[in-house]
Amino acid sequence: MDKDGLKKKGILEEEKALIHHLRYNEKLKYTEIAQKVNRSLYWVHTRLSEKYQPATARVEKRFQDEEVLAFLKNEGHKIINEDTRTRCREFSQEVDILSLKEGVVYVTEVKNIVNHHQIQTGIGQLILHKFAYQHRYPEREHVVYQLVFPKEFINYRYFTEDFLNYMKGKIGIGIIFI
Image (tube, rainbow, N blue to C red; front, side, top):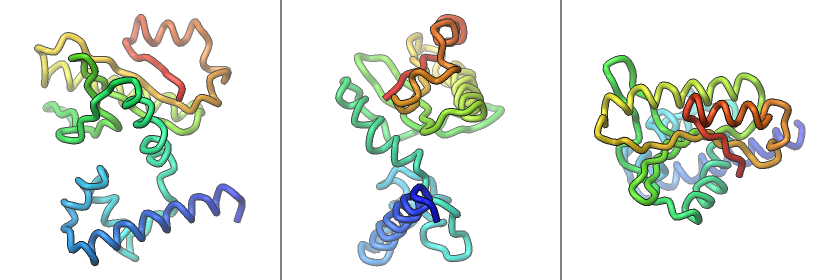
C-alpha cells in the first residue's frame, strides 16, 4: 500500500473509532451522531456496518473540516449547520459549507484535488444550488457561491485569470484557494 493509501486507511480507522464511540459508549442515535459530526446518515452507517464499509476515508471532508472551516471562521463567517440542503421541486442537494458573513449567505463547495472531473462537479453542484436557492429564498439578493481548492493548485493550468474572471463575472461562482 502506498503512502496515500496508508493515510486514507488511518483516517478511516479514526472515523470508525469516533462513530463507534458515539454510538456504543455515548449511546447516541444515528441521527444524533450525523448531526454532531455534520455528516449524512449514510456516512454514519458506513462507519458502523461491516457490510457497507467504505473503501476509503473522505479526505475531501477532512480538508473541509480542518482547513476550509478554519479559514472561513477566521474571515468572520458564522457556519450554519442546520438546514444545509438546497431544495426545490426538481432536486435536493447538500451544501458542503453554508455560512453567513455580514448578512450575506455563502454557499461553498469543497474539492481537495484538481482534475477536469472535480472542476465540472464543483461547478455543476453550485449551479444547482443557485437554481434551488433562488426558488427557496427569492428575497435573498446577495448569496455568494464559491468553489474551494487547496492552495497548491493555484497555478494549475485550468486556473487562468481569464477563466477565473469568467466564472466570477459571468457565471457568478468564485474560485478560491485555501
